[in-house]
Figure (cartoon, rainbow over the protein chains, first blue to last red):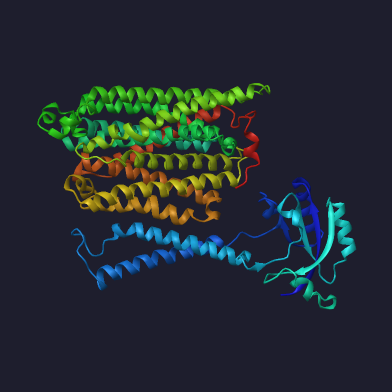
Length: 194
Length: 399
C-alpha cells in the first residue's frame, strides 16, 4: 500500500458542503472521500459516485441459494433417499419452497454482508487512517488526494474560499492494513510519497 | 385532458356499452343457463375487482396520511381523483348484487337457494352469516361508508389549496389523521375480512380459507398502486405534475414490487397448507383450478403476477424508468384481473367458461369508465395541494 499526501478540509454545515463539493470537482481536484457523521442524502450524486454493484452481487448470491436448495433437495428426495411422506410425490416442489426461500435469503444476506465488508474493508483487525476524529461527531471531512501537479498551498487557499473551517495536509496510508495505528508514522518517508 | 385521451375514453366506453347491451340481450336474457351465469359472473368479477382497485387508492391516501408521509404529496391528487370512482362503482356493484340475489338466484351464490340450504348442514351452519339480508345490509353499509369517508378525505385535501395560518396547521393535520383512521379501520373490517368472504369466497360456500381476504386485498392493492403509477406516468408525459420525478416513481415501483411479492406470499400460504394437508373438502378449490380447463390461467396467473413483476421490477433502474413502469403496471392490472377471473369462474361456470368478446368487452367498459371519471375529476381540482404543510418533503424527496 502506498503512502499518499492528502489535503483535508473540514466543513461544519451541510449547506456549505454541497456547493463546495461541486466547486472542488469543477476546479479539477480529485476528491478521495468525504467522511460524514451521518448518511447525507444526495452526497453520492454530488460526488459523482457510480451506483453500487452490491445488489447485482446480492441477486447472484440469491440465485446460488435457490439453485443449491432445489438441486440438493431434488437429489436427496428423488435419488439418494426417496421417502413416502404423506403420499406426496417424491418431487414435491410446493413443500420445498419455504426451504428454497430461506436458503435464497440466507445466501443473499450473508453474501451481501461479507461483500460489503470486503468492499469497505471492514473487519475487527483492519486499521485505516482517520483524517479527523470529529468526522464521527459533527464535522464533514472532505479529503482531497494530491498528485505531483497539485499545489498544496493553492488548494488549501481554495478550500478556505469555498468555506472550509479547518484545513491541513496529511500524509497517510491510502488503503488498509492489519496491526497497530503507528504503522503510518514508521513507514513515512518523504521521498517515497507516491 | 388532451384530445387523444378523450378519443380513447369514448372508444372504450362505446365498445363497452355495446358489449354490455349485446351481452344482456344474448347472454343475460338467454334461455341457456350457462349463458345467464356467464353474464352475471363476468359482471360480478369486474364490478368487485375494479371497485376494490379504485378503493385501494383511497386506502393509499389514508395510510400515507396516517404515517405522516410526505413523499406522495406531489401526486396525491391522482389517487384522490381515482378514488372519486368509488361511489360510481359502488352503485354498479350494488345493481349487480341485487341482480344476482333477486334476479338470477343460485347459479352464482348457491347459498341463496333456501331449499338447498335446509338439506345442507354446512350451509345451514353458515346461514347466520351467509343470508341475503345480512349480505345486502352489510354491502350497502360498506359501500356507503367507503364513499362517504373518501369524500370527507377529498374535502379535507381541497382545504390545502388555500394558505393556512400557522395555528391552523396542527388542527388540520389532526382532522386528516382522524378521518384517515376511520377509513383504515373500516377498511380492515371490510376489505381485509368480511367483504371478500361475502362477494367472492361465498361462491364456493362449502370451502373457506382464512387467507382469502388478505389475498384479495393484496391483489387489489397492487393493482391500485399500478393504476396510480399509470396515471402518474401519463400526466408526467403530458407535462403536468411538475414536482414529480423518478424518485417518486421509484417509490411507487417499490410498492408494486413489494405487493407483488406480498400477493405471492399469501397465494402460496393458502395453497401450500391446503396442498400439504390434502383434505378433500379443502383441495376441491384447487382441484377445480389446477386440473382441468383452468390449468393455463392458473399458471399464467403466477407468471404474470409474480415471476414477471419480480424479475422485471427488481432492478433499481427499471423502477425509475417511465416506460418499464407503465408496461409493468398494465401487466399487473391485467394479471390481477385474470386472478379475479379464476376466483369467480370455476365456482360458477365450471368447465363451461369462456374468455371471449363479453369478458374483454366488459374489461374495456370498465377501463373506459375509469378513464372518463378520473379524467373528469383531474380536470376539476388543481393537481397540487399547494399549501399542504408536507408538500416540501415531497419536492425534496430523495430515495
